[in-house]
Length: 353
Ligand SMILES: Nc1ncnc2c1ncn2[C@@H]1O[C@H](COP(=O)(O)OP(=O)(O)OP(=O)(O)O)[C@@H](O)[C@H]1O
Image (cartoon, rainbow, N blue to C red; front, side):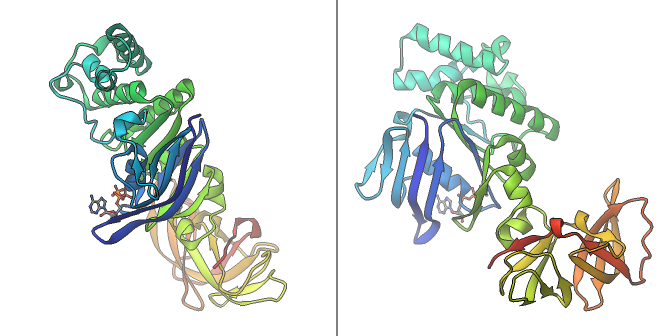
């Protein structure tokens, strides 16, 4: 019912293509987050689903309804799509009470009787814990409370689909964590299908069933938070999710199990091919020669940065390659003197060309 299917979505602004043949299927009840740096096309994708942008080509359907079809030049306007939308800017009316703001989408659509509109708005206010503030005006509410009103208004408008565009970015860090749990709880409670846009990785990992990493108007990788975090497929995703060390493979053995990367022998690989790279996190670099480690090398530590419990250390290998290691702050490393380090095979991720 509430599934969202995007096929071959393209969007061009003034001859600049910002979305390139995007395909995405969001299953009914799924919570999918579009994640990526500024300008990668997250908001444009979401706005196309909401009906706030007209796709240049491609097709979007929500449940059984085709809402945009470039080929047939058909387009359903936003208020006929039955989607709830929550923005970073709240976008609530300053001259309306909290309750009136929440009722607004139903009144605009002339959906239900006055009494039914009121009851739906009251239920939504209750769901976000704002019943006691129903008659307050936005200027009498804190930023977090205003965002709850925006959330309640989205829930009322939603039908089965909710779209969120950086809804928590204007809140302080503590409230952001609380509200993201709330957003996820409401998604589950209402049984919505949700698309959420953020550039905050931690938020994306915490809230989503599936994460879609976007790069330059294309989908780079889609997967569960665990898959994205521990099995990035491309250099872009590995870098984006914090693999500080990425080494290009030079010579690769015919059986694909061994290679040379930045002058260092690497073993324990599987299916490596010329043009591939290996990635590993700073925390995977351990001091010592490591028995049977996939990557063992000598390097000189320098430039330490304390991050509280840990220390980030720059390592320079004999070949001059720079790597980053993360060690407990109380670990003694012989600074400015070469010593042994290693990385286990299980901590290496192979990135294909
Ligand atoms: N109305 C518009 N007119 C012209 N260019 C636009 C318009 N809206 C977006 N763009 C461009 O499209 C590209 C994608 O923008 P979009 O807002 O989708 O990115 P985003 O990933 O959501 O970024 P952010 O995290 O900064 O919001 C950008 O290069 C942007 O400048």
